Each structure stands twice: as C-alpha cells, then as structure tokens.
Image (tube, rainbow, N blue to C red):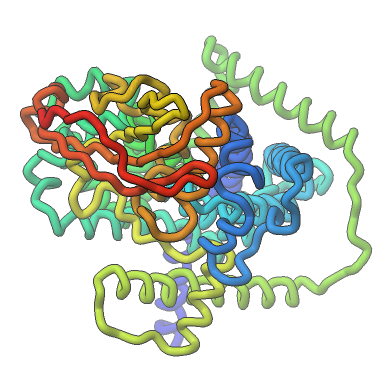
Length: 531
C-alpha cells in the first residue's frame, strides 16, 4: 500500500514539475499579452473607418450574420462611431492595467472579453493569430498572472509563489503543444515538408512575404533545410514538457527564434508574436535565476541588468503607492475558490480540447458522424466566446503554391475604365513587385480572402462594392457606374520563386456590381498576359 502511495506521489510530483510555470515567466507573459493588445489596437486603428464603423465594410448586421447566434461582443451594443472609438480606447487602458498588474485577474477577464468582442465585431479579417490569442487569454483567466512583478504583488506585501502548477497551467501549456502537434501531424500528409520544397514555395508568396524574405528566398536550399527542421520541431514539440531545466530552455529558445523569423518574413497577422508570448511559458526558473546572478555581477552586463531591475522595482512601488488597493469586503473560503476554479477549468478543458476539437476535426475530414446534442451545445458555447479550437492548418498539409492579387475594373460616368482597387488605369499587370503592398495592412489581406470566397453569395461583396463606389466619389470626385471584382492567380514553382514574370497567370471574375441604381454587368476588359 505504501509503495502504491509512494508511486502515486512520485507520478503527481513529476506531473507538477512538467506542468509548472515559473511565476516570473507568467509575469513576462502578462506583459507581452498586454503589449500585443496595444499593438493590435494601433494596427486596427489605421483602418478604423473602413473595418470597424457602421459605414464601413463590416456593419453590425453583417458581423452578426457571420458569427454564431448570441455571439458575445461589447460592440454589438452600439453602432455609434464615437462609442466604438471609446471602446477601443477602453480596451487599450485595460491592456495597460494588465501590463502593470493592477487588479490583474479582473484586467485579464476584461481583456479576454474585449479581444473576442473585437474579433466578433469584424469576423471577416481574423486569422489563426487571433484564434491563438483568444485561447491563450481564455486559459490565462484561470492563472495568477499578477503573482510577481506587479502592483498586486506590491500591495500584497508577501513573497509570491515561485511557480504555479495546476490544471490551468497544464491547459495553457497543452494549448501550445496541441497547436504545434496538430499542425505537424497535418504536415505529415504532404511530402513537401520532408523533401525540402515547402519553405522555398512559402517564401515565393509575394502577397504575404516581406522584409527579410526578399533576401532569404535567394537561398532555397537553406530554406529547405530550415523547413525540415521546423517540421521536426513540430512533431517533437511534446519535448517542451518533458525536457528538464536548460534543455527545455534551449528547445523553447529554438521555437522563439523560428517564430521571430516568421514575424520578420511572413505577414500572417501577429501569429509570430502571439506564438512567442505563448511558447515563453515553457521558460524554466533556471533562466531567471541565472539572469539574477548576472545582475549582481560587477561587469557591464550585470550593471545594466541591475539598473533595469532597480528601475522596475522603483516604478512598481511608485505606481503601487499611487493606486488604491480597492479590497473586496466579501470573504470567500479558500477551499470554495479552489473547488470552483478546478471545476471551471475541468469543464473548459473538456469543452475546448475534447468536444471542440472532435467536432471540428470531423467536419474538416468530412467524416460522417453526427455529433450528439450535448456535443453540439458545448461546441456552440465555445463558438459564442470564440474559444473553439482552430484547425491549425498554417501552411498545412501543403503550403499554398499560388500568389494572388486583385484587379477591380470600374467604369466611370464618363466612360473611362479604371482599376479602382489599385487606384490606376485599368490593366491586369502586377500592381506591385511585392504584392503584399496592395494591402493597407495584413488584416486587409484576410478580409480580401473573405471577399473572394464569398463571391456573389451573401452581403460581403455588395457592401464592399458600394463602399468603393461611395468613397471613390468622395476621395476623387469621380462617379462610378459599374464595378467588377477579379482575382488574378499566379502559379509558383521552384523555378519561379524569384521570377514572378515567368509564372503562369489566370484570372477569375467573382463579382459584378452596379453602383447606385445601375444594374450589374460584366465589363469589357483588356486581355491579360498569361505569363
């Protein structure tokens, strides 16, 4: 009996070690998540009128039609532009509250609610980065993000716990492993990730690559080796949990480096930055202990770290003294809090990892299996708060091997033909050498994916077309009578990664529109070079 108890204790101890998160790592995660909110808000603000107001491309009626029934969003309570702008500002202020760790649990919950509110406010321009961001915030609500390096910690006045090991810490770590492993397993369905051709093709996508990618695509062999290494890392991602100490730190650093390379080469939203925030949760305490010893050393690096540590402590104490403690007078027994939290996390794990994943994967694989009523209700619940698992098909199973750009032929009241999407005389030639420049920001590319997929179905393109008719008149003083929407597709091969002029091209008309009271019609357009 004692041996059984001892073995059980050993197993539980090992699990606690595997799923523990250093409280200093949690603090870094908290700061990064807050900074990501602010960065995202600033990026969205650049297209605020176009994407987030009632007169833009995603009015409330369309947003609600494109989300599940009863989807949650603070923005569904109003269509007023000033109020929407005020909600943006409030979201940013709560992010600052999260960064400094003031009433951290409340700030985390409110941040999560605002994140899903914003995604539901315009579901047409979201991506895998947003899916991961929502899920990380969801699990973060159950974690003590303010345990260290926070105003809450200063107000508490007692040393924080060295590490956190519970169901919530296990869930957020498993979230990252789940994403990596599913993506890796999907990539096993394609030979391109083992024969070294996948990554060079990805770097040939001019409509989504930028900055360092322009130079790196000149070295396809090197990119092939890098892609194969990344594929192996995805399959081996459970080692992030199993590796001890410095081995875990080194493996975590490898993931950080790869995600940083994504962020500097491929415009796939904020995915690289969000993934960095998630994977740093695996950083063990040894890293912080070493940095602490370096800060006490007499050399230049030590003095710099010591200055940063001292400045941080002083700033934290000043803020803590400036802000009220606002204690809640109601006392809840610790056992009740623990039991409630455990129950909630267990339910969330079942809903997000088991039911949501099962239903989603069956639908993706087109497996004939009708989910039970309970499964459907749980899945609908996860969709309401946008915490259903994504398929994590980032460049999987096969990377996309087609570039694309858009040409919108339009006839003016004077009979002139223009390409109003690229603001130029009508031609089907490439608008830019770097096709990603055709988009105001990366969210516009995701929106245009929604546009081309919608075609003539629904209200996405009627709203887009009428928006262009109106704004073109306001901005240029030119009246448009008719508008067509074309997608131009270029086929990428290993020989044309750096030579877009040699690619085969096709075009597809996917929507026709008559501005105002004009009837839609297909416009006569010039021939297009097929190469």
